[in-house]
Length: 219
Ligand code: CDP
Image 1 (cartoon, rainbow, N blue to C red):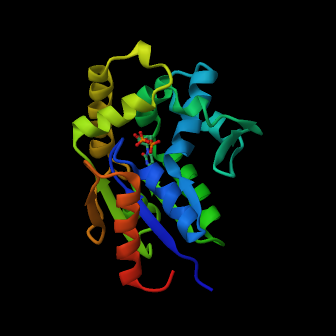
Image 2: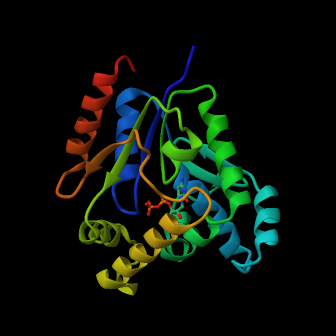
């Protein structure tokens, strides 16, 4: 039996993780949030006080850590860090960690291992282009920068510490780094379906995706 991969890529705040989760529940697939793996590694770096330029130390500590997904939560050495990886200190550093090719290899392997024996919905930046180039179907989600910043700001637990304008600047910076890095930059795969989520709610986006999936055939 061949297992299916549904790939969802796009910039920060385009709604990938939320729709990927909803879609995975609807289809009975496993959701892999690849960004949460890069976030978990960034959390290790922050927690241990490693300099983000000390690539050797980052790789060493990542290899000596155990990162697991279970029931939509992410665990580092057995401890649930799902809330910690969403903190803004992680947001501002994660794209620097995700530039390191050795770190990308580790994250790619974790994803391929999970998808080896399950149907999966995977969201990230390089899923359709690099991690699963032969995915069953690929989507590329976008939204206007205003809408993406507003969504991200509304999600923040510590809103009082930041202005909407600061969050917008951080997203623009992260998009720039993700799009211009050498290792698997963020880009739309040639065979990906583009969906602009501006002004659409989660259900509308998921319905649109289910329509394209139904055209493709049996899931
Ligand atoms: O949810 P949001 O779009 O803010 O970010 P995320 O999906 O959690 O990803 C956080 C960061 O990890 C991104 O800005 C990228 O730098 C990196 N990332 C990546 O390089 N490749 C992926 N497949 C997923 C995330």
